Amino acid sequence: MLRENTEVHVLQKRLIEEAAKLEQNEKDISSLSMQLKTLQQENSRLLQTIEEVRVKQAESISQQVIQITSSYTNQTKSVSWKEEGTSVSRTTQTSYTSPIAQVETLKKVPRRKDVAVEAQLPNPDRMTVAIDETVPLQLKETKKKLKKMDALLNEVTEKLKTCEKERQRLVDTNKLLVEQIECNEFGSLGAVNVLIDKLQSKDREIIQLRSQLISLAELPR
Image (cartoon, rainbow, N blue to C red; front, side, top):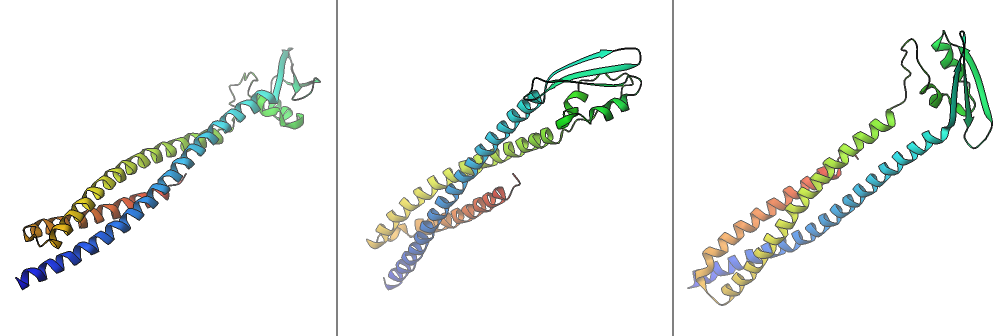
């Protein structure tokens, strides 16, 4: 009888310790949930920024050159345009036989309107005019990263939800077994050992989820 009481006391002590661990895990999960919410808000903000940059870029291109007209003779080419915010027409002439000279002359256009003009010039010698595509490529890469982050966020969120449900079930079982032990119902000792194993397993799972969330938060955005 004394031995059984000693075992009950030891198991009861272990259950109290596991209950304290569960309480700490509950606080950790709450903190992780807040971090997830912050990451999701950052995800939405970045998506909105991408859309705003795309719209501004399109508006900027459309406003740079209001109107362009071209005319040709046997030896020369004339290009006329209206600058942004003015109604003044400007004209420049270049040698038709030298596409490179066309580009160099148009680079002298006030307010650097040459990029938009060059993009619309005919190219008899099939010379390609490079247009900066750095911003569109960066936006594309950012969208890929955001999509990957969003998928990882959803995955970790679902795992945390499942973990919280399992934790609550174990807490309820823990309370029941503690009550049984206090009432000297020794038949529940085997169940106590099983519960302790499950609690330890749940602790390991929470640690793994926390590591995943830390890795996710360190992803470049």
